[in-house]
Length: 388
Ligand SMILES: Cc1ncc(COP(=O)(O)O)c(C=O)c1O
View 1 (cartoon, rainbow, N blue to C red):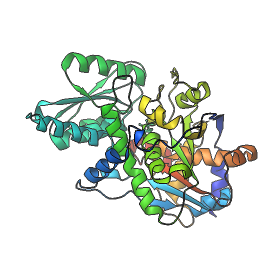
View 2 (tube, rainbow, N blue to C red; view 1 turned 90 degrees about the vertical axis):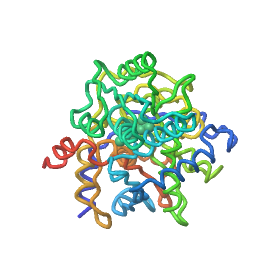
View 3 (cartoon, rainbow, N blue to C red; view 1 turned 120 degrees about the vertical axis):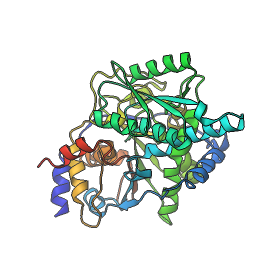
């Protein structure tokens, strides 16, 4: 029953390009020399797990997908319910805002005197808006033209001021930087650049909580592969740093997944130096639409990612419907557009035997997928999953 539906959905999954990272594992395990280290990841776990409403995100096993692909286990870290915000992003921006507020208090100032600002495709802005509401400060959120009205309203519901900017994500980031500088606002970005590292480092420390939980949930199982979706690379960087810290030289194979319309990490790995990708068309996987990899993420991903895959949008809708209906042995899963990326890449790779063996996938493989979001845009989720 499940197999026919999986095979049908798998036919829609397409890889548009593969880049093998020649720099992968040409390194000695850096341990504490990484900026994102044991201390700041442990601090994030201690703080976030103390927040009201905290619970580890479920790690679902997808046995029907594992059987289809011929691997031992496929695990899906389901971030749909994270703090009621709908995505893993709840762990990052809100945590960075909480740290800023503590710093203000330590300096004898009230958080209510502080304003935080960010550019976003939606989910990061929702986290910053929620975090600002939690600590009682103002939030200014810059969005580009393609960000849906539903996503804008979700941020406004936390009291944030939402400012729409002409152009793409990079344009919204430039506008945010300009205005924050002139107004003295704190930029809480999920991406880092030359001279701007402290806050995105904390955002990534927040994301590392996903990996801390996963390691706990795995018990005796050892991961062999992780397919990690990449926008600016913060999620992948946060997860890899924590896995690397735990697994050392036995770090599992890390495979990045991007949209064909915004493959900034893939092109940077091909060039072995960060490259700007000019986005001319928006992917349905809105959270992945980023043209430049975060500097901090680059430092973690360049030595650890073995292959960079970019995928088309075609499998997004069929996989959202497949996960919603539920498969033999697994529950119904609310998967938003970005949440399908890792699964789409794995199903597409399965159809190419050369790629499958280059990725080292076989019947012993234990694969981690991150279901990064649920119905973060409920209207879009409904319109996609109720088709057919
Ligand atoms: C749902 C979702 N998945 C994945 C990503 C990619 O994360 P990052 O930009 O940290 O690489 C994002 C980023 O906004 C997102 O919102």
